[in-house]
Image 1 (cartoon, one colour):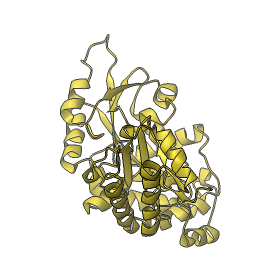
Image 2: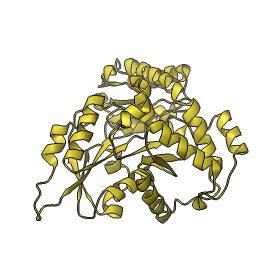
Image 3: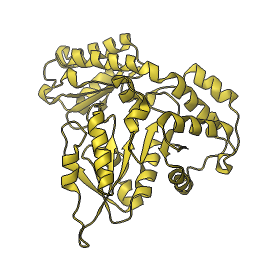
Length: 347
């Protein structure tokens, strides 16, 4: 059977009709010369929305994160981050390869370290120990199941890290999911960090692109690094136009994604061999432990695909379902039925 329902990630979203129209009609110029009016408008809109001096359009979230890590650190330093962080697990060892820094991993319960955990990992100020240079946070946290960092915890980390002389970068790939779930402006969820990256191409649905926010001086340096990495794009206003639509129209749709994810979680949590607490699902990511089924996550995903549903095996026994605006409630019921047939009917 050909898979027709894709729940592997919210990166599979397709641009909306409004995005396609905006792309077709976009005013463009050479962005390397800072002359693309649509890119400039996207960057200005983003900076204002997030409460920063400036912003920069980059092709991917990984590029955005790694530019920020590079600018905040010196080779030979350490970076503190959760053991399941995207920057550590899914960006091809770039902190080491590109910035020459060593990740110092923190084991957390839900993907979000406390200041006490971070403080315990800061290296002593002595010449024969690698010095801590940066704290990296992630909100929402992908591999922890779309969990949200409590605002008070986030602000304490920013305040204490700065007092300790450390910079703070936020991988906010899905920060709008957190903002919608909490009912807060996105600017409140990034207040205090030195830089933030978020994606236009996940739940917001743009076909490509992410944004970096920071001080004006930081963004100017980031622009040079973007060019070094091959990210100096030319008439890229055709893509930035979709990003502007994504910022204006897509956040309001995310609440539906969260409802659909909770539906999936509540239903499959009742299936035999599945370990999942539905109360932990607060945004659009569901991660189910299927170790009790006697099957690996890969096997479960293969059998789901045969029944027309794509899900992701994110570890040996963890299956991930990610809802997005191309997936409606009826589709979620289809996914649950397919999971039930895989685990119970075994046909």
